[in-house]
Image (tube, rainbow, N blue to C red; front, top):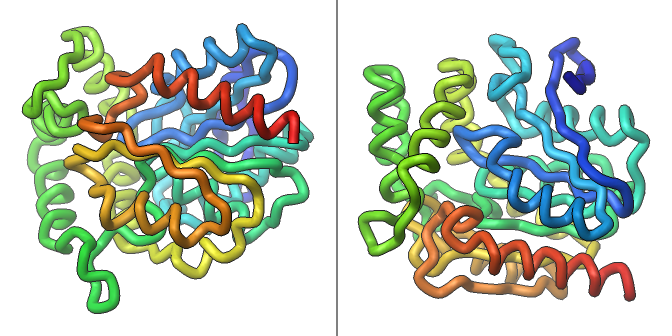
Length: 276
């Protein structure tokens, strides 16, 4: 297995497919690197080097008791980029993964990074606050944590319905639903719960001004998990020169429901960046 050790000694698993310009994928909650298999295979077959890791506490990575915060997640990404000595990287973050690639740029700069893609991301701020009234009420996140602690398996099984929008006309296979649950249950319960606090309460607004690389923001208009108006719409407005694509009627889990469209859009963006 391909692994590396972070600053605090946590062993992180990653997969590294293909050769060419590197694209690093950061997964959403409560998934792992396997959510990216379609995108990675698609790009690796077209001359790119696709890399994805399991966030600490998830998938095949170690499950430390602490460290489930965005400064640590960004440090872990930095450790991986240094471990593989990657340059000219495109960072791709989905959902909570959009936060750690954003925080990485904010903390470590763009010396190794050439572009950024935010997919259904929690940036710039997920939770409702006095100066962010369009955010989601704290009670919703408290309910998620309570549900996980009471019966994680059933909670995740139920969560997949709005995640993939099957309650709004989207169709995904039984296999996808099974895989989603299987992946989620590999994670640390502590990490799964702590990450709800991290992705809901972390304010990335100060980080957004530090993003100076070409950026693509993609969000589903029917996202029931991370509402477009509170996140993607604002992120695209705050990042100078960002390109915004809204997938009409798409749910949060559009990497599955809109797989081909996403693959094509990623390839088009990467091709454009390469020729700039």
